[in-house]
Length: 279
Image (tube, rainbow, N blue to C red; front, top):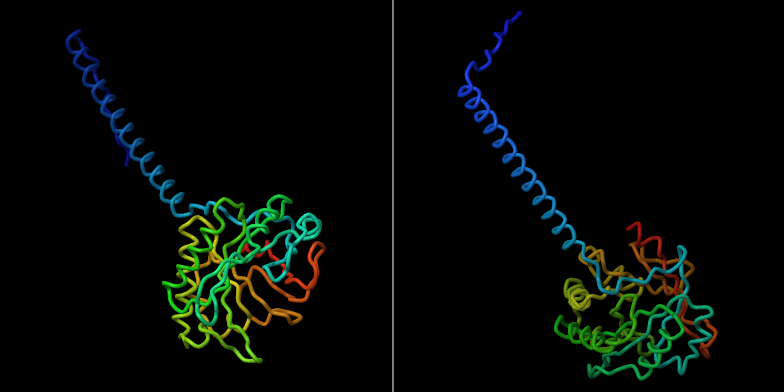
């Protein structure tokens, strides 16, 4: 249906023209104010969103160092490896994990590794990216936090760019599992809670948490679905391939490996860098 539009008459007097101009100007000012309010509101929403996203994805102070390639080769050491020539180690190893302490598996006392200060100092001196681990025998969450606090205090002032790891394993005596952790008879839920207590302490301190355990431990002793995704998984398995079928970042494939600068056997590992990026 066609429609007709009447032409608007122009104001005939100066007073009328001023009145019309004031009216139209008022409309324009109102529109400008509304536009400004909307812009401020939108910018506030965007800023709030950025803040929430930033806070939610805040990185640890010491994220794992950017190792080169897809797979890095490295070692893990303790006082059992004696005095290490880190200059020679740096010619081959792309990373290292250094034991800083342990809890006794009989009496439960916490003690430092006698070589950790030397190892951390010289790994840094010769440019070997390092992480640390604590040999745990924690039977509850309180003890796990004590172990984490010990490790965090030990590394203060040193360059630790790789994860801070809880070494969760059962000692073997005369071919059988033994020690206070094994004898405690914890449930899967309790064992997992112990590990998460350690990792949570590490995370809150600004470091990246990790777990070291055997394929057997991962398969049968823990609820892996309850371990947060930011926790690095380090698996010990001396078979041709890892028998644990879940996700892992690091594979300790031998306890009888070798590395220049270290006398005798040393634990050797593959660090799967690409996996972590695509997880």
